[in-house]
Each structure stands twice: as structure tokens, then as C-alpha cells.
Amino acid sequence: MRKPRDFDAELKALEDKARGLKTRKVQQLGELVIATGADSLSVNELAGALIVLAETQEAGKREAWAKRGAAFFQSRARRNAPTNNRNPDGAPAQPSGAQSAPNRKGAT
Image (tube, rainbow, N blue to C red; front, top):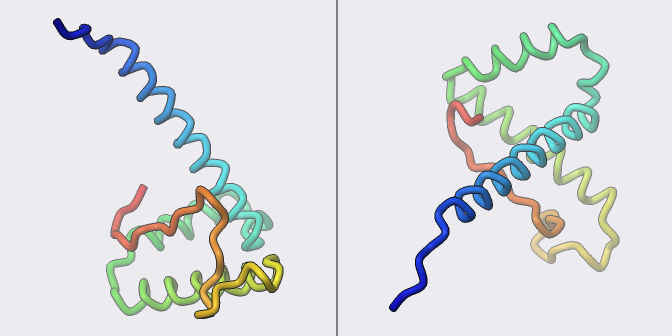
């Protein structure tokens, strides 16, 4: 006979994992704000700018912003990575646990 599953324990473990992921996301967003220098903006300015960005549907603008963001991360990776950690194709090495954000509209 099979051992019954403890759905409550599994659900609690999933909730804990989701809470941890959300905390990490918020922390990384804060680090991004600081790294880009956007922490010098007022909260209202930053919120307004992010709202405009999120509402923009023009593919050309979004693509240009994505390229600029990729260049920002590549330049930071080049500055911070030792020469022996670089990938031969020129792409920045991502630290373990880092994931590239998917290109999607309305990402939360």
C-alpha cells in the first residue's frame, strides 16, 4: 500500500519557495535600481517612468531599450568578471542562480 501524500506539507513548502523567490526578485530589482543610478530619482519619478515603460507597445522602442539594457549588463560583467571567467564568444558569464529575463510584455 502506498504512503499517503502530505498535501499540507507540500503546499507549505511551495508557499515558502514562492515567498523566497518573491523576496529575491524584490531584492534584485532594488539592486538594479541602484546599479543604474535610478535611486537618485524620486519615488514618483521612478514610478512614472516605469508606468510609461510598461504601457509602451511600440516594438521598436522596446527593442531599443532591450539592446541598451543588454549592453549595460555586458559592460558591467566585463568590468566585474576576471578575465578567466569570460566566455569565448563575448557573452557575459552569469553567476550561478542568475537567469535571463524572458522578453515578454506585461512582465510582473
